[in-house]
Amino acid sequence: MAKKQKDKLEVLEDENSRLKKAIRRKDRTIKQLKSEVSTAQEAFRQTETYLKEITNDRPLSEILKNVESGKPLSKISDPCPKCGSANMKKIIFTGFHVISCKCGYRNRVDEEREIKKIKQD
Image 1 (cartoon, helix red, strand yellow):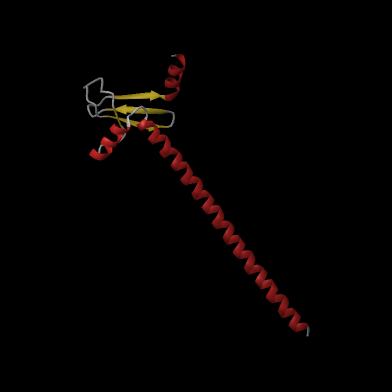
Image 2 (spheres, helix red, strand yellow):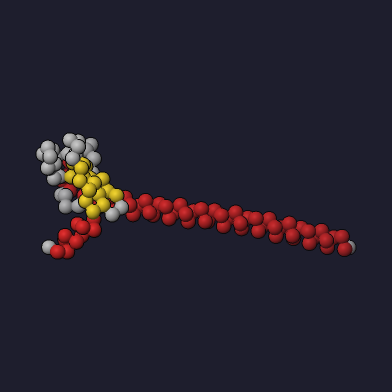
């Protein structure tokens, strides 16, 4: 009779350890998924910021025309001060952006200075 009870206890202990392992696996999966969600949200925020920057102060018709013609939206509409070309690119980094042209002209624009200029005006 004692042997049968021991068998029941062993079965319950095995079940308990199996359930604990399953819980640990689920916890690892949840932690991994939370990390992936966080990464995806940060990528979405960066994409949103980028799209706002390159479409700022542009009419929708110009944006659609660039998309249809295959031109990248990172092109800015101001002409190059060196060669006069209208195909300048704006590359956005954290805290600043770089405006460049095929002729070799480049200009770094700090966002903090730009914000200060706007506040002074």
